[in-house]
Length: 230
Image 1 (tube, one colour):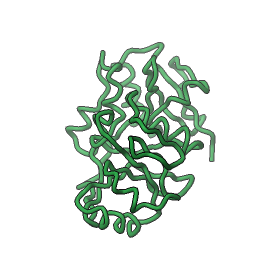
Image 2 (tube, rainbow, N blue to C red):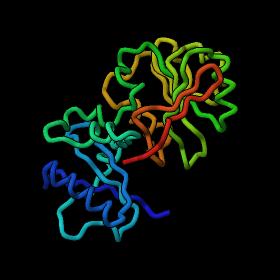
Image 3 (cartoon, rainbow, N blue to C red):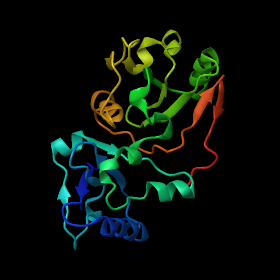
């Protein structure tokens, strides 16, 4: 697998030009994933997998190790109204959180607890969900390198349901297990995913998040109605 490169146009071009670059790249069949630096400056980066796709006639900078550490992927729209809402707008970069956060994770700092855990199959999650009852278990994404799906829930009763070897992260007063855990909730916006990338995934970053999230409740899945990433 080729080594990914992260580039930013932000030191050289404004938001309108940036958006035009994205449109042109799609028209030319160039593949990329969009990221955002969750520390100042809140620059946008494109992850490019093929060196031949690097632009030749515009200025850009490569992400250094400090930049890469704090890069978090943008959420992807499912519906057309979300595509408009999530499109980069002039003067809105300081509101970076709205571009990287799935809807269920909005206002996370006001929550009292969250567990992030892994599961290999639908049947495994269905079993956890049956035991948890009406509380929702949300799908966050997938680790392609490690081969598991990533879920989270805000109900601390999950502690008696999910085996310890499945727990990835825990935050809140009830937290005491996982690769990364803390008795307090993350207060810096975007840090939950940053911590997942840095301490858990390590060799990859969470991608293909959607604004609306698939979830399980009472053992039944509530999938997205359609998946049209625009």
